[in-house]
Length: 122
Image (cartoon, rainbow, N blue to C red; front, top):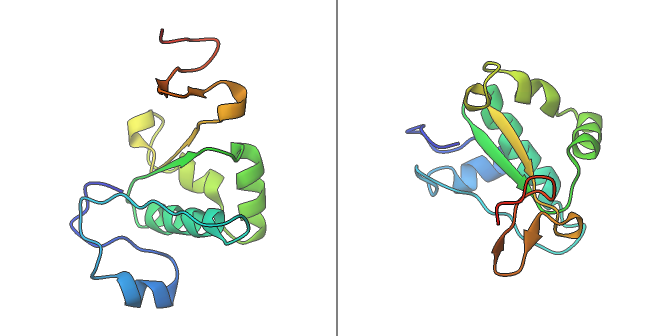
């Protein structure tokens, strides 16, 4: 969501009023909490709301698969697939970019990022 001079759209009216002027660009939003506390829903809502306004959002997941996440969020009325495809065909033209980093699948190792098993960086 970098590049905008405005505060981010959080997608939750009360939260926008509460934090709207507190977050100023450039910004990164990290959401942490216990299992089941709504982190995924909140992060998806923030990215979706900003993508609809033409702002870019990078969603990095350490757990969710893209297809499962998109399917689950569509049930909540968030069409992440559409938001991702808006803005062009090149990676830098997309408004929503989803990056899966799954430790169990060998994408990360302690001490640094290793890369995908089929395309190792070391």
